[in-house]
Length: 379
Image (cartoon, rainbow, N blue to C red; front, side):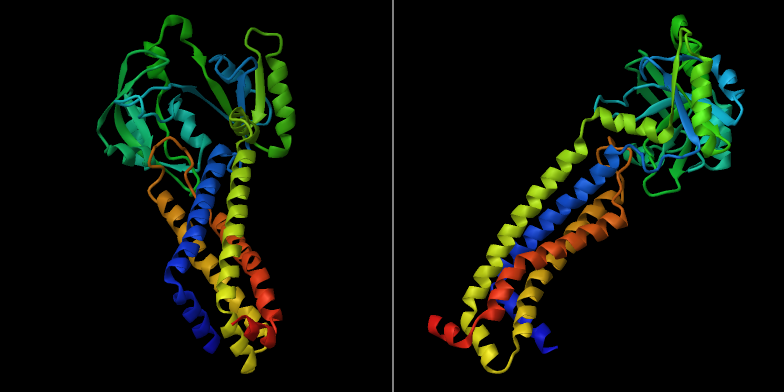
């Protein structure tokens, strides 16, 4: 207990310096939390991808469509359990900045394909029965203050005009990282209003297989079936499909890691310098402690404890603030996945403690090796 009291007294000796040192850890770990959130976001759900689902897109490009007639042919492939499809709509709500992902889907099979999304049965029934019905993710509905029954006008960008929908259902994810920003409406509504040349076309297919171990054969079978046709396909696992989006953004992870490395390296230098100054200021006190019988290891522990306390308090506060930002979802509405995992928080706090220990190590070792006679000469 006496050691704890000594640590607290030393921390409160220079209150401003203590606050600034803790603040440096606070800022660094808050930034670490944001980087962890963005890292998960840029993965575009790769880690959450199902091994049972495949994505079938146009071989030329994702933006090129496929015929609706392919649905039955894909469904007839042995090992395929379920097939659904979607079209990217790309509209905005009220203002250009109010963007969120919108898909024209097939209600009969869409929700069955994604069991991680939950919708109340009565709401889903209301959506299926209303040709102008729509389903919004919880995060998007909360962002705009939508309620069931609201009339939602969406301004088309790919498909011109103002499209109005009745909000019939709100879905929720069953996992913290599930995307709750999407907006779904009937594919039949889209096909009814688009130009004739676009009718009978879909953006991509999603396929669920009976056995993930059989996925490679099914991928080859689907692509071979449409080879040398006017609409050749490229079939991928859902994970590979999601990774394709992440790769389009370049090596964001490398940039994030470089930023994090620079921040923590700077933090190490600043904190190490601060601790060294603190130890030099207390040279006489350290000499007195040794003179009255404090062992070298106790002196080492006291200095390290100060540094680790800075890291623990500042790091924990920074991570808690970053976690708190995610509780109400992405404030901008632009990120489908806005979540800080507990594992990332644990890793961040461990890293902060490691930095704190490294920063205090040299001053602590210097204090431990300091001889009483040498210390008294400096006073």
